Image 1: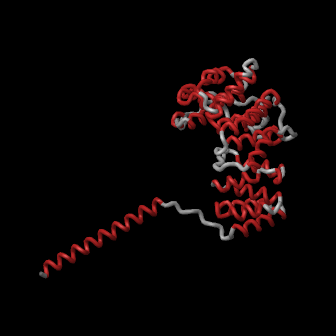
Image 2: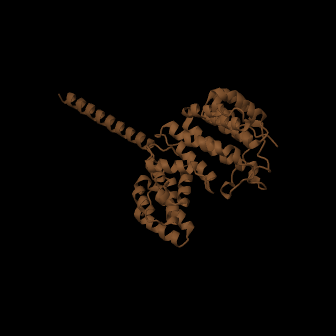
Image 3: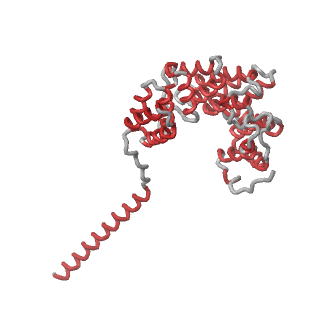
Length: 355
């Protein structure tokens, strides 16, 4: 009987040890797979907004930038305080709060940025909000006022409209809960106006950092808007292109728009543009449009461009006279597009061609 009891105790102890070891192993794996959240600043969001207001009022911009970054760390928990701060009506404070929102990558922050795009915000803050919304998908429906404001910015023809219209077009193109045709119609209407009107050399200071010519820089904003809408924009743009077949310039840019929207029917035309276009800035757009149009079939041509060191020429580039002109040659555009097609392996580790 004692032997039986001894063995029973040994079995129980063995089971207990196994359970402890198993629990320890699970805890270790769980800890290894759990990301440690960034430490929160010791100051609450409402206090950070007050600190930001004092810093901007004093013109202490380095301090303001630091406080704005701390506010971003709070994520969505900072949104109520930021929203309340925006209602103070202080333009400089609001600009820094928009900077904080830009650092919060959430639907809530995006929604709050969109809410700033109204006439009551004023031109400066609307422009700032549009810039912060670039490349961010808007996943909620627009209010009637928000849609009307974006449409007005796209279609209006005031002094600042070429730059503002393109920025607004990008935002509207990314408003995914708005029906595609409602988004595409005003964007297409303004694009058609801008194609013949915007000329090389017609530059404003906000465009000086582009590596393409001022004209292509402006028109590219509309191309990006079509890329956000995607294939649902093809029918409307194709119809417009057919009606302007006799105008070579219109045909070319509307073909680029179709390519950016992912229309495979224009892949052949775009390939020809990539091979024959003499304006480097326009050729850059053709490469991007061709990649989106042809998909994997574009890979051989893109690989051949990895040895192309052509850069935007000094007569067309807004950054003439600086080394920055050479930072984004054709080969880098090709690398970007190969990455977009999931084939970064074709350029990573490749020896850079000599000039």
